[in-house]
Image (cartoon, rainbow, N blue to C red):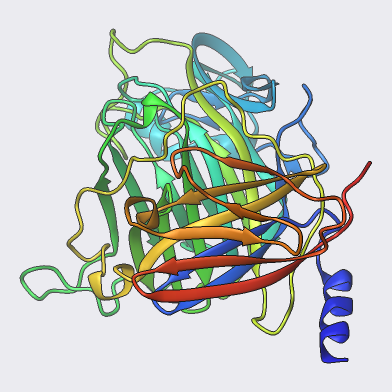
Length: 404
């Protein structure tokens, strides 16, 4: 009876196209269910889900956000940075008076000229606690500044999943911004209070192929991952929901995230996003349900998901916490096939991962790629099995009948 109630409750609360993500951390196996996002199908942006920015012209950085700079093709969104001198109408809220005074220039005829254009999308919905997954690729280019971040409209309240620079694509900048400062409990090597955040080196250049970035936002803490490998940890709470931002932009010499571009920077410069997937943690008492959905990873660029953090010290990397983070296993169903992808430290270990059904057992044998299984048509209850370092984890889930 208890099991029936749990399954019934899940039908009410989980999306009709539910996929699963399992997280192994120490002695726990968490399960997350897909709760939304965008796979960027077709050729048109879903403006019921996304919107453009309120401020479009950035005077001090010499660019404007244009809707045309976000292009969809073959299941991938491309945020394009272009070098093009253009005159645009400017709105009163876009005028940067301090910049005009500094440069000793004026706005004439309610128009302003900039040298670059960029792309940005903002979710209409605000989000809170959950696991956020982004599959992306960037390109080289001095001064180019792609980003994935959260902001809800409250002053000095922001979570930067990542900020990148095209001249150093083997580093990832992570940060938080809080109304009262984010330095409580964080001290530098001299014992003085310091702000949390900074650059973290990774083992390969992010322009060499697709990578998977994840941000886990929990009450009282945030964790960052690159390809399932733990990257950074922040202890602190953000109590307010926020919008999710994806964009590229240009830096300027002498300003934030300097340097700006030079004559060798190639344009157009592209920030590719294959998908954004949002996952919500499920209670251990609930038996999850997986149902068929149209989730396809782009093969436009190579992907081996081996890029990981190099620097594992400092205030962004808390060893005591992050050494427990072992990996992520996504289990997705498309028609009759089940797809399993493994990310993180467990790909480097002698680990057993299998999906156990009543009719068949499916063992994950190659962690360097997505494993696909032909699921038996009458398979309804299966179990994920993980055996690692003498520990055994099992989690049952229900497979709803695949679509014919």
